[in-house]
Length: 367
Image (cartoon, rainbow, N blue to C red; front, side, top):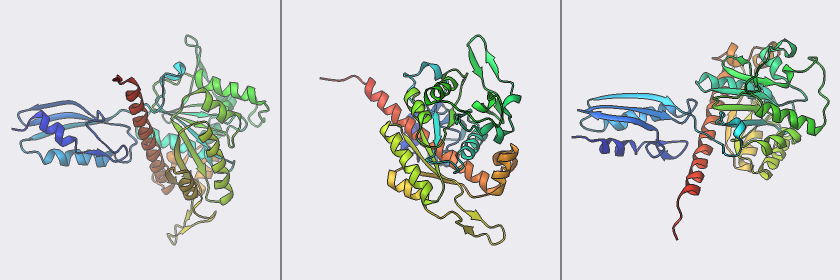
């Protein structure tokens, strides 16, 4: 007669490909019940956006099938995003499990487009997502979402004295563009004021119950990235580049800054990676090839996605209609979805490492 221990031992052979750990030791098996050959349990995955969710579920079913004496399997599959940052250091944002800052070395690489569509892609998987447009000098997220600044009715939670972010397609959004006096007026502020604005948007916004907060940083290595890195514990940095040598070279400098600040790097996404001709089905590398791969190899960080060049992305951004919403089955949307799942996977990997470190620190020492 098969027993609970037999089931646990068998499930321990199933390995999460991202974390390289078995699902039992990771606590992914919940509420296990075995009664007269009827097996019931919950498989709790580390994120709904994991690229290996289907594989893990399939491996679990295969493992159980190999056990004699199991007549029926009732498996409930859920997901609970792991906390990928130390929450001890910031009491103001405990409702946010992961903060992903999207950075670039230079402007013009489509960083905001990537940040926005990654946010939408994560939300489509079932994750709870927020998007902070921290580019104070040139906030573009309102235009890309069709949420014009002065037209926004941004509410305040008077009891908590916090900003209540408006929602768009399931994501909570805050941008300095919502508060600009005139839509086309340039923001002229010195560094300390900019840093203060960003800090307020982080800690004085009601970011409750979020799996991922995506922060769209301004390009370069100025005050805002420094403020973010020094103010709030973040999960990691996602770097956006294009294939050109000049873009990848400047992106490497930004990575060097974050390395000095001891901020984890999630990986790199290459935007405008190639153009796929609809008539000949060939990929044309208009801006060159291999920029992101060079960054990945040089800094030992994963290449998380390659987004094709598509006029629909540009047109959608100008019209306030992101490609993830208007063309969800397009190659571009599929590329954003794949990249978003890889970003979520990297967050889970860093979360698992953080969990190990915390357990090691709390473990009793023996003399």
